[in-house]
Length: 416
Image (cartoon, rainbow, N blue to C red):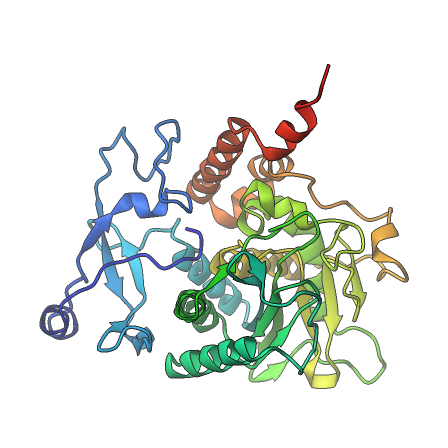
């Protein structure tokens, strides 16, 4: 549920005989893999309709998508295949992230559109207790040898896993790096991202390094997961700039729908309390739900030229699930298209002083409240999805409410 791969190893001969030849599922897993947090913790208080102590944590089956099969360079002799979660009747579970994205893609196809996306991933890399660079290495080419070796190893591993990166570079904080991926079909792009996260961790560990993909790993640093997207129809990009210099109508409606809808879907793209600590003034993470032309301070950035014009969504952090971010974006675009939602004027100046635009939620409590009370979220996603991810968000809130933080210790441990 958090964009991290979970599964099991199957004997290759069993897979070929039972799965590929006979069409059987690839075994079962405990359904709690779609209800646990990042540490695979089970909450007795969480009431997921799918499973829980009230249901005894039964199994669900794995239906392999054989189009996704690939070798993983860090596990020689092992192939990886993505699967869909299915119930006892062989029906795909609608709350599963991959299926949630598929449903939105199908709805988009019904309107005659396809979407192409590309990910831009930021993370921190540490060697021992320190970041791999002592200062910002944004666009730097004169990097330390250990970082060149890491870049080379990651590039080679991603290429061998059929997940090639488009570019790798230093970013704006000590030890912060960025990997961008080519544009492509949405499901494949999300599958590739999960392979990248697995590969990234292994390449770092091979070199005695550690990867941090928190949205806000420190008070000063934010890691984003930016989504670049464009709509296509009949093989042509519909966001392309008209000759008169105005926005194309599909682009107008996409921007309008995204700005109006994404605040209601915040738990899908900002799923934990830490997610909201990225949103600070002049941080390159947005503070308001606004848009602008080539404006990195806005939540929605219009960028590219002519046929390459597209949108970049800058709200999601490195802790987000790519399938859920993409599904939320498509839901917003569909709403904009169906309701013909025109966007407000673009932000003309400092996006962090755009006080006339709605502010992003300050915390997960606000985000969850908007999510659970939204008629749009209910209509776009369905009650089972709303309930499932609402329970997940509430679990994260409850866990954090019970913890005593370092800040509380620092501010409370004073002499009388």
